[in-house]
Image 1 (cartoon, helix red, strand yellow):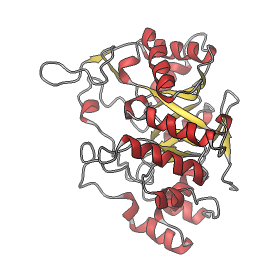
Image 2 (spheres, one colour; image 1 turned 90 degrees about the vertical axis):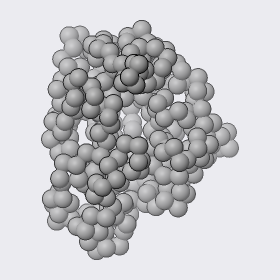
Image 3 (cartoon, one colour; image 1 turned 180 degrees about the vertical axis):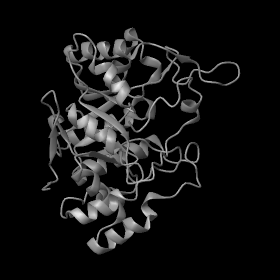
Image 4 (cartoon, rainbow, N blue to C red; image 1 turned 45 degrees about the vertical axis):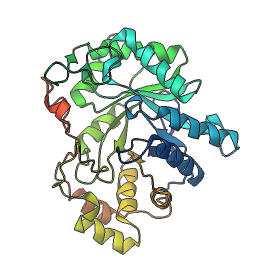
Length: 324
């Protein structure tokens, strides 16, 4: 499967998404300024797809980084594909545009390339990102996600965003949107946790039948943030089967995982604050996995999901996602 550093997928609305993206979520051990500096390095390395979100709390710094690389001539705005996300407190239809316009102000951009519903779970509408009751428990809300989607369609038609999609949705939730009477725009993508331990094979096949791109986060096993990742869970990058394939190909385990997903038609997101690692993660275009390598890596799937937040587990409809 021939891929170049400028390879992209054509979305179902005609826009193009680079197949390799740089994630901007950072653990609390890193500053917002470090997130911005990492974006500058990523753009210099060759990344043109930047994945952000209001919930990450660093869109001001990320926007500054993007604009600085535009100003110095490294890229133009048209070269950059920026993804933002609608957080759970802004899913009520009247708040969707408010959430999007706040991201635009923080980033100081005229439009987003892609805007996603961050999760199919909603919090109490308002300005509080994590509304809680007197016992410290999340206050949930229950807007019909189809009404949220219609408000996203209106934002697309207003020119505030070029493409719209979803994140952390399962097949059933995707079908809710796909079956909206008078649907104007299908989701262009579904961004989900995906790696060799959770290869999302069934969801990927469903998305392909609907011309929806699967975008993978947590590709290298997440940042293992102590706040929400089981520290006893196995580490993807230490998997012996993966490492054997990597050694044979003379590439790092991380590069092999990315290549595995890319060859399955998945768009890949990785993140790091270490310049050498950012460069290393982009070096996945000079080799290929053969059929045997792909089959071997298919075999390590154990349906391990790293991202199982307590705030998700407490939701009355949990699990609101599943593999299919």
